[in-house]
Length: 240
Image 1 (tube, rainbow, N blue to C red):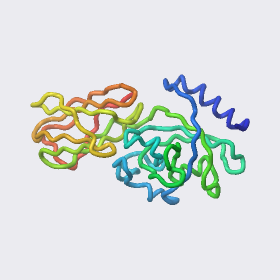
Image 2: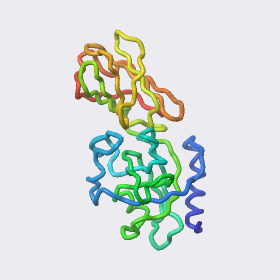
Image 3: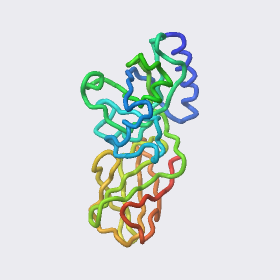
Image 4: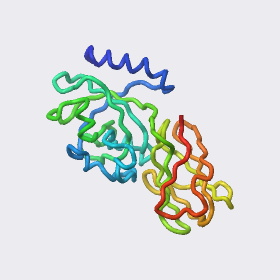
């Protein structure tokens, strides 16, 4: 590892205790996709849709199989620094959110740890013509503005809730839903960060209990009023 990389890692390690996160740096590689405006990164295997309107912007990444974990890593945040390639690396670090899956093929084959970054964020740590660069990465807490968002889709007896803008660990491991006339009921992961309940909850105020991969749980009571309708998005509390 070159002197610059060691210096950067040392600085970031000092900040680690302030974040309250632990874990060492891991070797990986990074490429980019999606075009100069990152339009090709919209949608994705996490189900977030328009990454601009959801607040993720261009600081996003598609993860290889080893990192994506069948969608369990959706919403997690990673800090990356380019290393060991002075011809192409640019000084500094980036923090990205996992929003997509990089399917097997080439660098994204298991068991590789690989980040396919949006082009704009890749260009903050490496030059365009590099194509692929070696990086060090680690998990870091996600810092979000506002509360967790719950977008309710589907229809009666099929409540499909997209959960976005999750702070802290960022990746959701379990969700419970409660109507004003029901007890807490577990939701099942449909795909990405879309969670499903087959209960009839029309005409009830809705509360949500969200647990992230670090074991922390946040309850947002009465997020949606009894007159909620499908297609609406509601904001709850936030991990701090």
